[in-house]
Image (cartoon, rainbow, N blue to C red; front, side, top):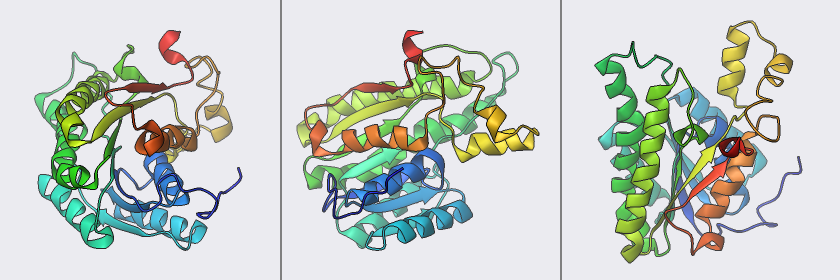
Length: 265
């Protein structure tokens, strides 16, 4: 894949973004893409080591990139406020918020406990709300601010075994629509992307832990999209970039399916 230089592209030139779940997968790919397009980026992730590795990789790829990071539990309201404060201190503005961090749960609805519900809601919904609340004053001040929420294709279609995750991802779509209504008067847009099967380090790690090779893993999502394959993290990051940029200035309250056609199968 050809790597673009910061001089070649500038969709986010002079803008600053905060990305949660930036230590790997879609979040890290979005950070790389944003930096390649001229943005200053603040990354938040609960995994301090993964965060450090992502920052180091971006600095290697884009030596001129302005990047900061904070290791924090995304469910923490204080952590959200601290992340926004640090972004403002580092970049003196905030134009884009990407709510990407997520918690997973594999319990069947018949077996789930209240504690499991509380844990996943605290990250996937309350955490998202906390970051929106903390970021909105700066997004409003920037003029033309953009929130992009990373939901899931399974927010709009069914499956078994991940009801908690899918319910919270559906809730993210409702919150996105509400944000679009509430923030239009302030010049802030809110949209969501719904990724399909994306081959991230998370899935690779789970496969390897189960004794499955990556080559075998790559053959196992042929029936979950019309395109018959996994997406790369970059294929999710590019639509996020577009929604974050001024090219999508007349788009708000929208759910963009980035699932290879799964939602029509």
